[in-house]
Length: 525
Image 1: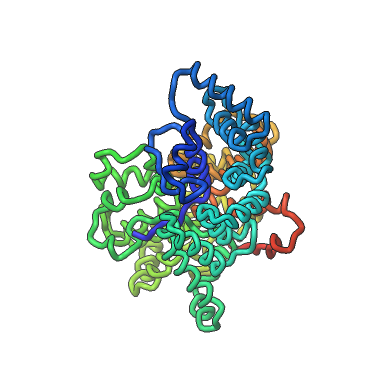
Image 2 (image 1 turned 90 degrees about the vertical axis):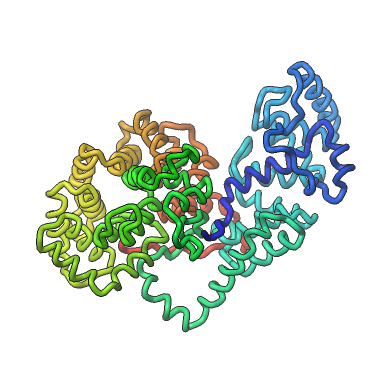
């Protein structure tokens, strides 16, 4: 299985816990024991240990009082400790605004670890306005004082094309700096960064540009690097059962696959795993759809069926699943595929009609005309094949090869939802929240999106991001919107990435270092 690049949301949180957990009532003793670093890099608290030493409530209140007295007198270390106490509610009522206030006070006095912590708070919008550009500036200051944690974060920022232009060569240099300093997460990530750096350098040559032409029309032109691992994505996975592959996936990947409930004994039974993946696919998980496509193609725990596999891959592509296009291309290159597809379509097979029409719409197949594709898709939808109803709805919604008719699109999605499609339910909820002013305070729609996230829906993540960006049914919070958009963008969603870019552009400083080229869009979306 390939090594996943690190999710920068969890990265920020882990960094915050890392630097703040060193601040306890015994911080001076820890520094003496670990005097090699201002952030105690060699110190690792037990996973269950709280950031401030546990004690009775009265004692915590007393220590918070002492920290507040010294903080008000201008002691930077006490200001940072008080910030931690407000962040975690130790001896004081939890208050992220006060936490950010006192952390900023310590940072203003030149305390490097406090500057790093302010960078994390600003990146997430915790207790202060969301500002990834301010975060980047503070990270540079922390890096200048030899903090590999900051180097690591800066490396990730250089891969996203959000704060600064994407540059894998620079990203690699920052990551190598962190790795050379002994920071383990950087050591783990460095091979991936080296590979991406080599790809970027090769992409500048004419030979690579020619070889990449075949898939360029189907892949995002501007998106974040996908940070999820993918079960069975390496030679080492050969011969493993589906359950074994899923068990090796990261927490983020299991969430995307609708398996966030944890690893239980059921996951060792591949037939049960397939059923869970089918539920996630129905909810709109591009990862689950891609895995099911692979299983259908190979006959792993499913009936071997190349047409069903193509249907799964097409649905994953519609949700911007980044692994699906090359897998679908490889399937289409099989000698018997097109004859098999044609034969089943002539017999009135709804899945085959859906696949052929969708392949034409996506630009994978030019063997049929637009009108033929429309007729094929309508035939499949008339048989109430759920994916065809959703695809037909997409065509009417965007005016793809049919006259734009959003009411007809909604009607088709409602029909799919009545037949049990969770994906259709999510689409209806998102569309309602975005376009129907009367539904903008619809708590049921918001609740549906929250429930759909652990089921695997990437559209629900994007929908929640929009709600927080616009203040629809929830408080208006740019940081929370960015968090949801980032979660979707990490899975390949171009809609999520574009929304994230929009958020960044809305507060982008005028300095040259932050200038980023306008993104392009794909016509087939």
